[in-house]
Image 1: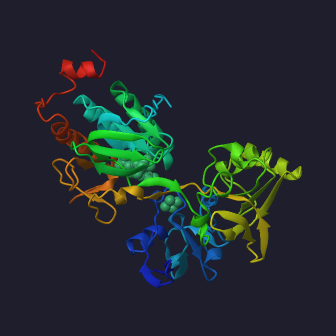
Image 2: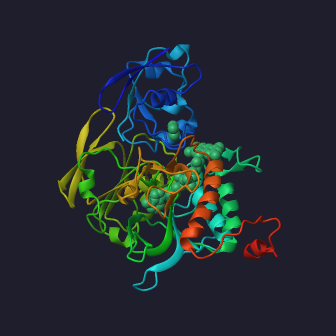
Image 3: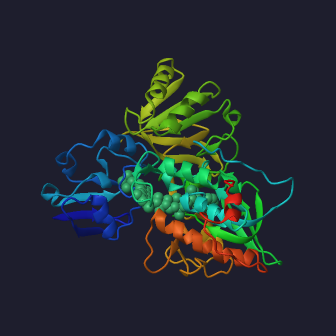
Length: 102
Length: 357
Ligand SMILES: Cc1cc2nc3c(=O)[nH]c(=O)nc-3n(C[C@H](O)[C@H](O)[C@H](O)COP(=O)(O)OP(=O)(O)OC[C@H]3O[C@@H](n4cnc5c(N)ncnc54)[C@H](O)[C@@H]3O)c2cc1C
Ligand code: FES
């Protein structure tokens, strides 16, 4: 189960996802610079990523709480998500994400 | 909130003398007051937030914590309230909404800690309980935005409104969709020349009644709202003339404004502690595990800010660190006194301090 992630310097990383873990956790453990200050509690919006290449539409729709919290993120685009709320599974194998600026 | 914090200002022109200056009023800074208080050490605390609790109240006030010994379930706010109640007998002084900005050693061996509000604390011991650093406003990723900060009253970029009057007659641009953004749209509209709100969507996390009020003002033509974001700021440093706004469809347009107020909440930045001359390793302060003292004698570090082999960033670990730190701090603040180990259950002396006997 792969995650293709582009960091803030534009470098692409291919990381191994883990079933049931959030994309934020995989990015953080993979050494990408992502603050995730609230540790995945959907309370800080510092785990903001863009979901690329048609993957946005394939994900389950974000919860009301996530949509609200995205209001506290910077540079939000229509394909923005909070990576702590995107959960790895077989269905996300190969997902492409870009870490948003801070 | 149960316990109202006491705020103090420095005596006219004078520094405040105390035993211990604590940077950070998160759960660990608060419990340090208790442990130091049992040893008769008086504390002043500084926090950039306007209330106690650190991460507990800023990031998860309503969420339950399950691993505080003896409290099977307690929310971030409740734990903070209980700590405030527990330390009440020691009458610590709080300096809220102030950033600790500099630290120097005085000739007499004590420390002088200064804040951005002009407070000066002189103490025997400094305890850094700064968590992951200070909570600071999120700065939008607009090139050169920092050159428009601190431009002066009512002009340039501001992350807070201190005096509404300074915005009278100004063209104001506000960004964000939370309570702060909407509250300031509503409050500044009557006195501004114009108020424009930009947000990434036509929906807001702010309280419904604020949203309704904003929509009302929009209908009356008193507020303009665009689904857009700020892409560029124009003018010279200190003198903003306008911004470029961009919609999701990539359309861009110029918008004239005197001031830009982004409200995207807070983020944690290490902040001025990095310049205090304390040895840091990856933004953490290495300490020994007997005293929790930094490599600079007299400066202690407890809670999330410190590092040592086996460190866990848990509230429970921070409480333990505070207890051991207090013992070591005592010997620095009271070099000629003997420390007596006592239990709160059985010592009438301690109970007197706690106001229970
Ligand atoms: C969502 C979430 C859930 C958590 N759940 C748990 C849990 O279940 N159990 C658990 O044990 N832990 C939990 N934690 C971790 C716990 O909150 C932290 O370990 C704890 O808050 C650390 O306390 P602290 O006092 O060291 O620092 P903080 O709480 O970070 O407080 C530090 C304070 O210092 C201030 N400060 C820093 N520098 C300056 C300066 N220069 N000037 C002025 N002020 C300054 C900051 O503004 C801040 O208020 C959780 C954390 C999060 C985010
Ligand atoms: S880590 Fe805080 S919202 Fe995702």
